Amino acid sequence: MLDQILCVDDDPITLMLCKKVITKASFSNEIITSQNGEEALNFFNKLKGTNPESELKKHPQLIFLDLNMPVMGGWEFLDIFNTDDYSEFNTIKVIVLSSTIDPEDLEKAKSYSMVIDFLSKPITVSMLEYLKNKI
Image (cartoon, rainbow, N blue to C red; front, side, top):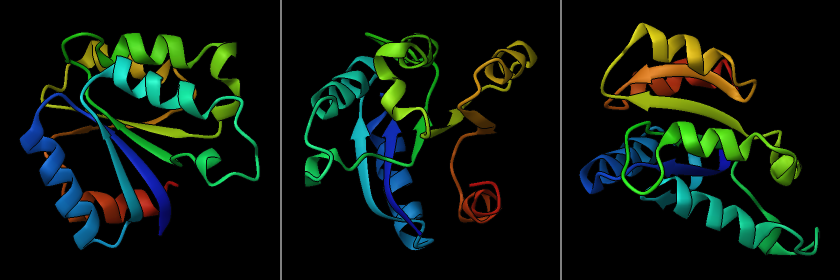
């Protein structure tokens, strides 16, 4: 079981479903949510520079990331999160969750070393079982 997961999606129903499925599957102890990429980056900005011994320093081991969101979408988030400014979080793995499976998006996702999979919404218990072997 993971300690902490971050779910980034603009749809409150999708976020609620993610929380329920992750909890049901006993996949993570804690689930944090953000409604867009900018909120997610703000979360990581608060963690940057905190005392390594601090409870605040705990960060997600996995991010479930939607691509199409207002304010800042998933691709923009990945472009920024993949820079040296966020290198202290480079062990975090990302699962892209999208309602469309565009072959170009699949290829683009492969260009980010932190992205370990590209899955279709909605998240299911069987997906989480599959992911346990990849993480």
